[in-house]
Image 1: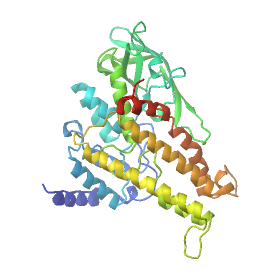
Image 2: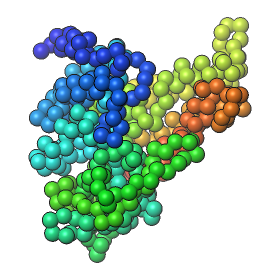
Image 3: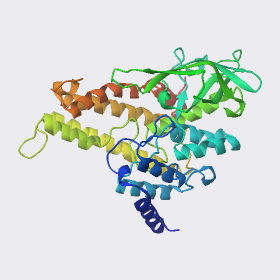
Image 4: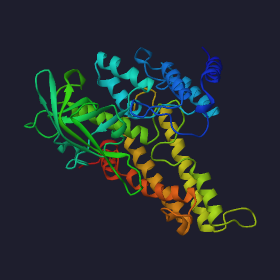
Length: 401
């Protein structure tokens, strides 16, 4: 089938199946069982889109994916953007766990878990960091003891993004406490809907609670949910982090062109509009202050250069698989740019950019404040900037320890 024919097929299918309720601005279309969709049209859209396999367009069709090639996935993304469709494509299932299962999972695990990810029926969260094991993740202490038919899990995870809404959690646990710390770790999938799992959201300075504490008290992990080899989970866990950083750095194979979690949308337009409103314009309609104008231009150039580099990296990655250690370059730069953009935006607003509440601040100003505060976390989660620089130095540049 030619790309032109495929585009026409996509366009016709979207026109028939994507309801007005899923087009244009609006709440994200949720996934999983803990946040039900009240609008039946959106649920129908989620089921249709996932059933088509287009929520994971380049994954194998035998597991519920679309089986598309890179060019077809690009066409699909362009047509989604053209009608401003909101899609249920987010979540750690599509960006992190799914690609990892495709590489390390058994056939039974792929068939059992991936189709539910495609349909948005299950929401996933990540159980890595612990109170005493963050940057030194291999120091984790959560235990999984072999109890014959199952594993009994005890311990605590922290900064578990979205745990209060997750159905399942993919977790690194210690299965051999006597082994060297990078050994004796296993990667296991755990059902969150059981008495032994407790979740407590953590309130951040930005006012939101995307992160949680997760406690395991004699929780049960099934033997057939062990991914990879027993006591060899560190290899699986590291590969999953590369998938995570690929998504955060904006170099995934996703069909829909979308900004990474670390890069603000259209910084050129956003910053230029903010500057013109708060700094003012000259007779030519330019930003009045030359220093502010130059900085807006510099941000725009950096953003565009980053986008082109992301595009080139995806085009050069002919394997279709997530890149390796190079994902740390994109994660580091994207996180830094996202933080600095949020910082500059609030500075353009002056005192109006640092309001928390009250009639003296409009919605954009309050959002800018919260964006400024939450941007601080971007350079920490998914591996701190310092960790990314170490990875780049050792694994990409080959520098000595």
